[in-house]
Image (tube, rainbow, N blue to C red; front, top):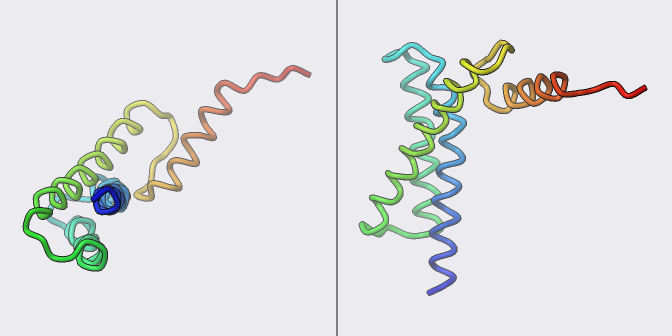
Length: 115
């Protein structure tokens, strides 16, 4: 029972993390555009594949899977909106690239030269 709960938790966390990236991308696209639709629909087969391969087909897990998917999309979009308001660095549609830029900008802002 504990192993199943751990596996369910890992799959749901993975779905959230995957959708963070796609939600970040989606928030930088025009609504109802091709990129917007791709940002929403590309992770669907990934989430279904993870669920089927590791958890099987259980209707009881469907609400949790949909909630994890939606949470990842929402949080990814909120991260981009937050950074757009707070940072003075140009943002792209790539979460990892922007994360590196934001961290570098923060480091440069607080980096003191002691020499």
